[in-house]
Figure 1 (cartoon, rainbow, N blue to C red):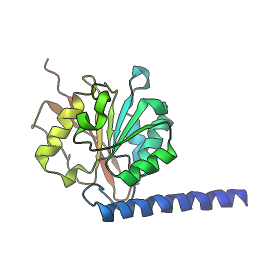
Figure 2: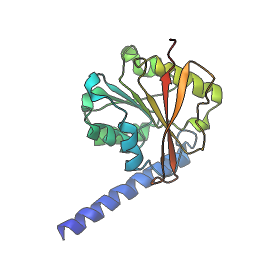
Figure 3: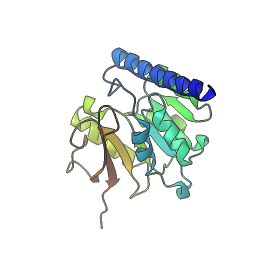
Figure 4: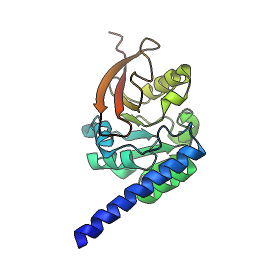
Length: 202
C-alpha cells in the first residue's frame, strides 16, 4: 500500500510539473521551449559534462521546473555551488522552494552581467543551458554563446538542449566549436544535445 501511495504521489508531482510548464508556455511561449518539461534522462546526460574535481561552481540557465537542477545536484554538485538563472518569476519561485540552498536568480540569461550583479566575474566549470534558443534570432544566439564561453575555462563545455535537428548555434559564426553530444528519444519531444567549447588558437 505504501509503495502504491508513493507511485501515486510521484505521478501527481510529475503532472503538477507538466501543468506548471504548460501554464508557463501559455503565459510566455517565447521563454518556454516546450509544453512538457525536460525528461530526467535528458537532464542526467546534460549534468554528466560537469567536472566535479574542478572545484568550480556550475551555471544553469533556464531551470524551468527544476528537473535539470535536480540532475546537477544528483551529479554531486553542492547546492551552494550551483547558480540557476530563470527568466520566469513563477518558475524561479518554484525552484527556490524545491532547492532552497541553490542560488536561484530571477533574471535574463541574455544579460548575464546585469543578472549576476556582483557575481558577474565568477568563473564556472560548465554551463548547462535549457534556454529555448530557437525562439531567438541567430545573431542573439551566437552572442549568448560567446558570452557564456568567457565565463568558463578554455576547453570546458556549454551544453545546450534543442528540439530541432541542427545545432541552434550554427558553426562558423565565432571562435567556438560545435559538437553533437546526444539524441535523447526518451524525451517529449525527442531532444538533441549540443556541446560548445572555445576554439583553441593553437
